[in-house]
Length: 603
Image (cartoon, rainbow, N blue to C red):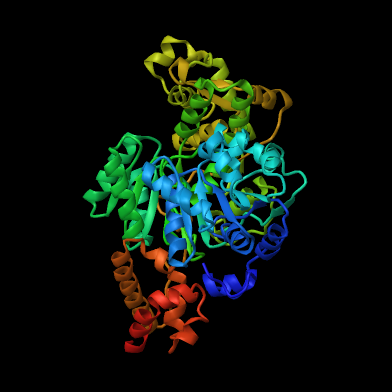
């Protein structure tokens, strides 16, 4: 590409269409241009990619970007092409001819950026190819994949430490949006970045409203959430299994919701078509397993809903981070129940992972369950997990309506005693029946009607006891043994609680079917206050869609909603005035400016 000056700020303005850097972007970029290496942690949507793209354009040679997914590579390359930046990928989906053409461009110094998977980068013949060309820098994206402490560990990433010795003097930057203290330390050590700088830009996504509710009627809960707040929007719904994905997608379709399934068991052409529709069209909802999402750069996803808990706070943070990447108001909505904790712990215990890894995963699950049961600001719990801080946010369900709590010490002791005295082999329903004093044939048969715990819990309702048992499981005082017909057992932590006579508070059970806490966000969707401006925004969206179809790219690759909203609000009357709009650089102005200007002038 041609830029009048190899100056970061000039490139930011002329190529990307922005007047100033955000947060620590400028400091990171200058450090890399000067030849320094770094580890960068920045929240999703905060502009991590600029931190390596701009230095690659400023330094001599090609920037080599390590990326875990082919879809992510192609999405970024498509967007870069609209900016006039020469970017290509080499991956397993390409023909030999296509790979040969990219290698020719690389060796003739005609590439600004080259995207490769970690498996490709460590191949001896590929390393030899890179040694023959000038490398501007190496960028390792999704760097949490390097660490066994991370939520998405990939062994292929661990081999990337060789870059420090084989390409001595070439700056390296590792980037991620999700890494706790242990993961950050592991990344820096494994990639030999101890002598580089660490930049931590915080974890807060203030535009996202967080809601976590107890499971009641899951399909209806999610449907009502969509119907009330996101009927005209794109979104993602995560389910725990392929069967549940297909069932939920079909059920929503029966409710006239444009929902498409996505999971690894579908034919490749169906998965590809559904993902492509989601990226290119408006008002599409994808119902998916976690196989869907990484590498999806669609900025106008207005909500992410979880029908079951993920495996960790890191996974939750990354998955919810696919909403609102454009910075506009969006929602993260999750429903959960005790069976989620049971299933996750079962997977951990029955996996072939070493004991250390199982302990790590159990700790991470405990932290996530603590987030679900929190009676304080959700955002504060999230930030504290990542060693970040924040005041109560006013933009989550527990801030909207502070949950009521109660001293659960005595009920917890009753519940644990009942589990112990019934032999730690019966399920929750049975133990609750004992506490309520139900004269059931089985209870009488086993003699549990003669135990001291029989009937001692009559002051509480069945729903209240179920709430207590769920919270005892989530706090790891009780566990469900799936090998023994889902019998409830007391954990080491539970025995310690009884022995040390500790106190405990619980959230009160939500009896009401509809509360203010069910309200995800007062701001349903991005909108302009003036009706004429809103009408112009819709016309600009239509024009963008036509331009995108013509080029066979997703609409957001042309312009983000944020740029169209600013155009509708400010109504520039010339090309010069359009260059003052965020997101419009010289390349996009030349390609799309006249079409948008015509719409504005007619409006």
